[in-house]
Length: 218
Length: 218
DNA sequence: ACCTGAACACCGTTCAAGT
DNA sequence: ACCTGAACACCGTTCAAGT
Image (cartoon, rainbow over all chains, first blue to last red; front, side):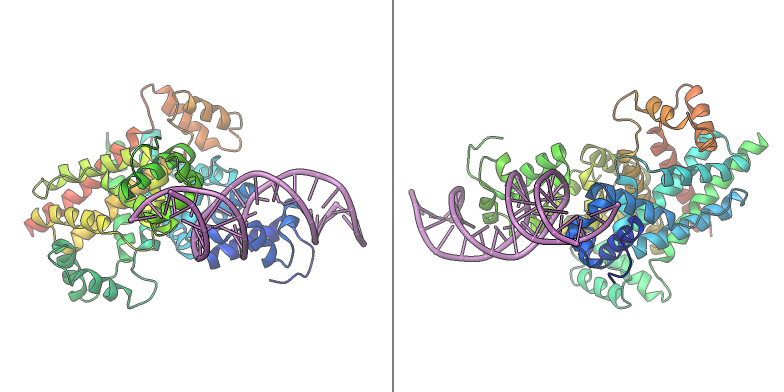
């Protein structure tokens, strides 16, 4: 990064995100972020009060990148758009997954986010209990899927799935069901693990829709 | 902890888990784990090759605590038992959630775990694609729910929900849907957030069961 | 007002030295 | 064989000093 221009809180946060993308969360130190900006680590304390505050800001930075349809969007489309966007952000910035929910205090950005989601559901006639079920189930699925996805040996490069198969298959005695599953999926041709995201999301949203329809009839 | 007896790999791992339970993952240092055992941090290197190896071992330690029904258990009961047990382990040891899936290499314990789960499903007549959908969806839900649950201001102490309501309610203008939701849920009397776990799990398993029945008929 | 250098109390890890 | 103390290159953070 350049040392052009004066330091701002925004530039500090962006630099921290860049370091995290490149070196992981463990690589984020006050000195390394300073280095990214051509400045000593100690200078950052004029813009963030502590490293913990910087991490809070980083969590907000990631949340803000999630696409959030307008309040009057139809609930199912809105939930799908947000879920896909959240997943894309988590995959692009793997350090953000555990962080968004794990910061001690829920940020204003997170609360705003939650409020918007509940708004779509209430507008569609969800009761509070059903809205909570829909929200917590979809959210848990998205977080959990992204968590698995970014750390499984699938995807990053095209050959990884075959590599994984090679790791497991040699010992079908130890992992018979895992190798059976891999064999069947890979031999069927067009299987890709990432498509499980849409499959799971559809499964959950269909089930929620059925419950919503049931409350309307009743 | 006591300094009785000689150091073993098992005692080192157990001590690390105790430190993590008490001080969080950030509190786990070679020196702090050594201190837990009445020994210098440097002594641990005779039993684990690095701090990273210790963290890998810690991830396996947590996985091993998850209740895994026998291979011939009926699939739905087995999935429920495992999901509830996993959640209990994650809540008891919050540091384990992000860790189990985020260690670079999937451990043998994790692969064995996966293999057992697929075994229940294949025995019940699941196709490989449906088994994968069931597995990845339930798993994502369990991980994601635990991730939210351990970091939301619900639950740890009985008054926390009311505290949270107090934090949000004062400004219904900023979070109208959130306050509406909280008001309706809390006023209805017997609502507790943790019960959303069973609700979400049932929603997902019912949907999977319906798909399984559909493949059987076809 | 903003940045810095030195300092403090910590890290993970290596290694020669003790028993 | 197992444990230790000193040492190295790092941390986050404070603070007096520079501009």
